Amino acid sequence: MKELLVEYKQTLKETRSMLSTLEKKIKLEESIDKFSDVLVELKEDKKIINSWISNLQYSIQWLSTGRRPGSTRGIERRSVYQKEILTDATDIAKIIESGQVIYSEDESIETDEEQEHFSQVTDAVLGVLTDKEREIYKMSINGLAPFEIAQYMEMPYKTVYKAINRCERKIQNEDVSFL
Image (cartoon, rainbow, N blue to C red; front, side, top):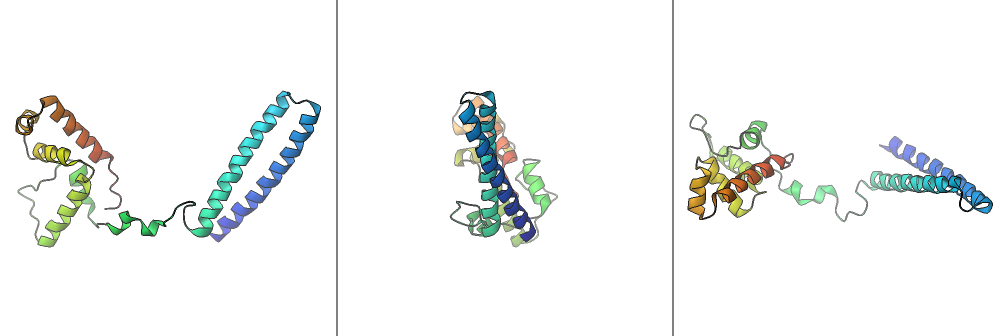
C-alpha cells in the first residue's frame, strides 16, 4: 500500500508539472491569437489534467487516512456492520432465488438457534419491503392467489399483482452481501 501511495504522489507531481507547462503554452497562445483552435484545444486539455489532479488528490487522501475523503465516519463504524448476521449461502439461495420464505415439510430446523438465525435472515431480506408489501408477499408465498389476496386486502387485483412483482424485484435487487 505504501508503494502505491508513493507512486500516486509521484504521478501527482508529474501531472502538476504537466499542467504548469500547459499553462505556459496557453499564455503564449493567448498572446498570439485569443480565438485560435489551438487555444481551445489547450484549454480542454487543461480541464482534463485538472480532473486528473483532483482524482489523484482524492485517492492519495483516501490511501493516507484509510477513510473516504469528506466522510465523517469510517466504514468500520457504519451501522450495516453492526447489524451483520452470519449465514450459510444455502439460506440466502432459498430466500432470494426461489422467493420462498416458508419451511418445507422435509426440511426441519433442528434447534431454536437455527430457527432464530433463519428468521433473522428472512427479516433482513424482507426488510426492503414496506409493511403492506411484506404482508402481500408473505400471503403470496404461502400459496394465496393474487385475486384472493385482493379480496382479503380489499384492493384491486391488478394492484396486488403489481405489488407482488415489485416485491420480487426489490428482493432480487437487494444487496445481501453483508449477510
